[in-house]
Length: 328
Image 1 (cartoon, one colour):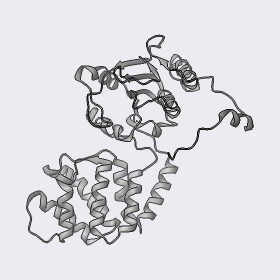
Image 2: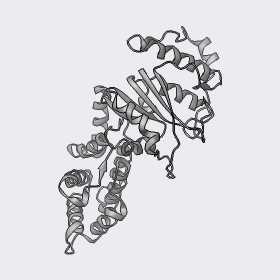
Image 3: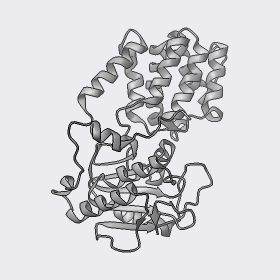
Image 4: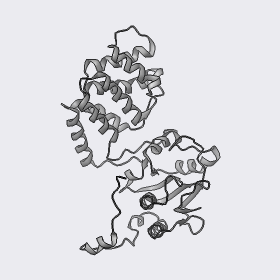
């Protein structure tokens, strides 16, 4: 529902002025040619409706790790120490690496999987910032609605600033006008509330976020607050430089589009955000039935993922919940 019908590529090619199949692995001329040949072969298998056989005929540049997810949390991914050892060795030996996965929530949860050594590549979109600006545009002057928006935004871009630990008290203080005498963490949350009450608009929200970034370093009570979407977080703070939040979003988006930002040497990303990128080495995880089901878009997504690597590719697969697109 809400998806466009698949294109009739045969019809489109007849309408095109020129059409040519990619049969030369140009990306791998400066990388691993064997990997390029294998990737193009895998593409043809996926295109024909088949499954890629990972049991035989793999070039040395393609490594397969069989590991079973132990997390009971939806879209989370956790492995035993023994299962993750080859993944850690692969990651530690690379200087140019993309860790690719299907879902945004999984990408975020892979940050603690790698002990937060690898940053999250946020790509060119800022969905959480978009939602925040939508709220700022309609809730300006409503400090309680803005407090709720800050809590949602912090949950979207990181972890730790939860309703039970911070959010409920923060909202209550804002609702009460921050007038009661407080000590400890409640007093700090009251300080944040006063920033919002002083300026119940995008500038007040930016001031609260900026202060949270400082408290993460200076206050023990905030030590577990993490920000995974660093660029999105700081873009929200930069909104205060503009007359309105909508003006700020438009300008920030314009600058980001023309600056063509690139991911760092190592990064975690969704496959969608990695389109058009290439990297020395790639880990695709998890390669299971939930991530790559028997669907046309999953076939395209799997090819996009494996074709980002120029030198080495690591696939983390499951035997208990195997993807039908792979033979393990």
